[in-house]
Structures are given as C-alpha cells and as structure tokens.
Image (tube, rainbow, N blue to C red; front, side, top):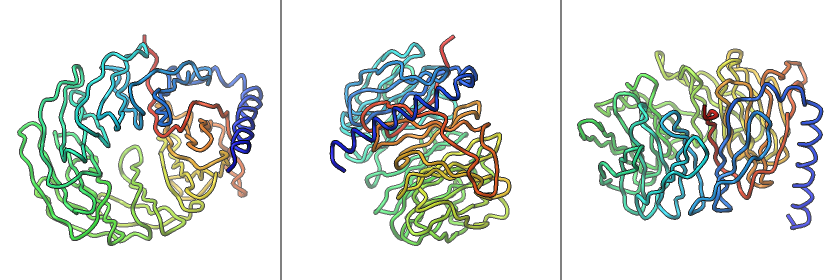
Length: 377
C-alpha cells in the first residue's frame, strides 16, 4: 500500500471514530473506569486510552520498543516488556514509569504468578526462565533451559511451564521448591496452557496438528487430540471449561473440552483464516479476528453459533475484553488504531448484522498488545 493510501485510511478511521462516537455519545457515560495501556511497537512508548471517554489521553515514554503489557493491579499498574532491550518497565497506578530493569539480553514473553508476587520471563538468547520480584524487579532465580524457549504459562500451585519450539521439549518448574521435570516431544511445539485446576497441561503440537494433554506434575502424555488447523492460537473461556483453537489450515475454530471427557467437541466456521481471539464472560461470547480480512466474528459460546460479524477496517492484531464485559478492544497494527465493540449493543439476527463498531481511534505506531487497568483511587 502506498503512503498516500495509508494516510487516507488513517483519516477515514479517525473520521469513523468521530461519527460513531457522536452518534453514541450518551453511552460513553457507561465506559469502564480505567485505562487501556497499549504497546505501540513502532515507537518507544505506551499509549494510554481513557475508557470513560474513549480518548487517547497520553503516551508514556519507554526505553525500548514495547511488545507486551501485563496488568499488575493492585500491586502496580502494569508491566511493559521491551524485548530488544531485554527489559521490563513498571508503570504505576498514576501512569508513571516507576522503575525499569534489564533482565537479560532479550526477552520474548512475560507472565505474573497467580499471587502477583513474581514476574516470570523467558529469554531465547540466554536460554533462561527468569524469576523476579514484582515490587523491585530484583532477579530471584535463573533457570537454565535446554533450548531456546518459545512459550510460557503459569498456574496456581506455583507451577510454570516452558516450551522450546523446534527442539520439542517441555520443561515444568515448581517455583516454591525449584524442582523441575522435562518431557521430550517428537517434533515442533508451540504454546502451552495449563488447565484451570493445574492438573493438565495442553501443548500445541504444531508438527502433528494436535493438542497434547500432559499430566501434572508427572508430565505423562495422556491424550493426543487432532485438530483441523495448526494450533497457533489458544484461548480459554472465562471458567476454563472450553478451549478455543485457531490457526493456519482451516477457516474455523476448534472447540476443545479440557475436562472429562477430554475431547475436541467440534470445529465451527468463524470467518476467513481465524487468528487472535478473546472471550467475554457475560454474555459468553468469543471474538475472533481474521488473519486475511478485516472482520471480527462473534461466536455465542453457549450455542456455538456465529451471531455477528464486524468490519474493523484492517486485520486484528490483538483483542482484549474490559473486566466489566462491556467492551471488546481490538488493535489494528496496520492502521495504528484501536477499534471498540460495545458488547451489550450486539443484537442477534439471522443476517449476523446486529453488531457494529462503537468507536475507532488512532493510538500510535504498530499497536500489538494491550492491558486494561482500573483507575487509581
């Protein structure tokens, strides 16, 4: 796309946001009392959007290009990852950078333990799982890995799991005792996700297009669940009773029951080349972005039917839901925009036209990840 075409697109999005905001003005009073912090990877800053007014309030300067934001409330506002500097930055509840700490040469992913006391990070260059205190960012322990990590997850009970991509290993850590176990898979693997009770780990088996279910803590393989697509995106619903899988190879989303019976229940058509996903709790909807289009499909989780399709202008790069289940926030990396869907306004009809954009606003260069934080008291 030419530069003049990109400018026209951004102008159109800004105008669309203004028109929709004006038409829905009275609804703005029902916005979420907080902010969405957006990692704009094309610049050294985090965009702050006020969710009561749906306006870009400010940008927070960060030393490095951010790619992830993890909410840490109430201990702190959020943690921002800049992988190119190997650093994590703490943003307090007043939206100021409280501290920054370089943990390694590079970091690809960060997670908080369920009690909020520890921050975990994985480094491919150093081949490490790094455990740090969330208040000071002081490194508590470094766990050496057998290969470069690509995926990370944590669960209650102090367990953390790391996957190592092409190397095909899963490493399980008990953080309290620092005990570890390792499982060698036969081929390339991707993301890992713990089941809500911590008794099972679901592994994206990219080589065989399957989900591998592993017992915790023994790391015994108990099931292989073939899926229709390469399992690149994994998304639990709010009670973790269903796992949704999307990826290259199918224009659908696989619905997996992770408890008894452990099975792939069905695959539901959900737009063209489904990609990023997010779930609201009440109503129970799954929002699915298209990798090859500009639409977001809305799936009713209870009926497993697509109830709405929203055109957001460009491909969705990330989706998150406000804690009050009122808004789906969709990032568009190509147009540097945040598109907002008002969830209570969705109306079911046979033509799937009962959903539309609430507003669209420009937020900065290449928005790729976001986290919602409540307003400081």
